[in-house]
Length: 510
Image 1 (cartoon, one colour):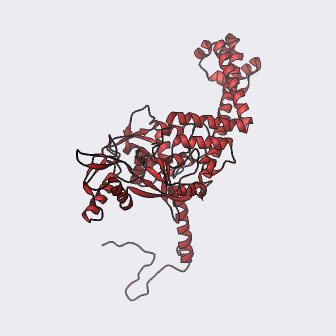
Image 2 (cartoon, rainbow, N blue to C red):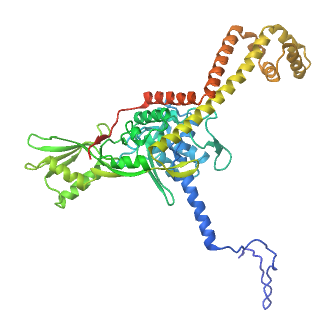
Image 3 (tube, rainbow, N blue to C red):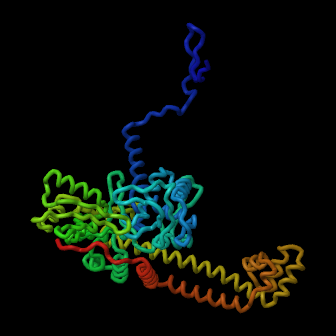
């Protein structure tokens, strides 16, 4: 039987074992302080969780996994006008190229971005069973996905040098460190995450209200939280409901931390010829009807609540939440409803802990601070985009100017090219005779003659005029900070017109 070889060998019986001499295998054993090693390793792990997984960036409101999903789907061409593809394909592409973690975590993130009851403005258009408040989604091999229209406003212009890119996990590809984000996604869609030693929990808001507040802050940088709350009176949950009091909301908007209650929306009506009932139409955020029905049934069975004769769950994917609670004759529905609010999840507390990454560091942010971070981000995006487009227009204008010089005497250009011994000679002759620079001459020489001869001077002059106009407009924009801010405001307003919807969550009395 063969045995593994080791550095130490045993000599014949009765003799001392022969082993490595001191210093023969240097660097294999290192003396370390265990407490220091554990402390440093745990700190590295904590940093990794905070920056790379758990906390969203305050600029685009996305965690790395969500950002990578949206970027990869855009790279795959999964636009709203294209067909859906299997979610498993998206997950595989994201995991293989950008996010080297479990496929389950990637799919969970993808699913959430497609759920209308989780996101105030869904970023993914899902096809198939993406779950409900009471049940999980189908496996990724059964569902299909593509980008929603709102997601295009998040990823658009990323290829115009608007944001910084960094290497992916193996250094073979580049990924955006933040998305251009044409609207304040962190406020609009909220989010939650648990890091090491800190956590975040953000409430969703109404897009139209958030954009109105952002535009107001652009025009009035010294605006107070009270003034901003005239535009954003409180969170707007995708499941509706009713906010009970605003004290906690005001505290959250001022300090980044606060708690408030959300109630179910109900209607008291006749449910049969002889009985009144309470019909639940909307429930607090993340609360499913099955959970409420089970809780009410348990309370009735334990005789902790009286006056309920039956409870029927008629909720479905088409009509939404519809839970009918029949009230016994002799009981007041309003009194039973107050008991339900007190004893069941029909009234639930929501705590805001607005922790997000700002310049790579976790910070607790109030409403004004969140909007300011987004405004600064969009100003930078518009500036970088304008510089990119200006440079591109200037580059094209140089080529058009060269073509216009050459097209005046196209026959001479062709004669020089055909009569030259090589490309270098043709290039030198063209530069000298037509006063062209190196870039212009190279472009003409690389162009097929059939294209060069078919070019219209009128078309080139029209393009030249348009390019000069574009460059002048972009130059004017880049010289004025106020003009850039106005551009940001105009673009926000356009997004609001495209995607804003009426408020779902009502503001109730304390």
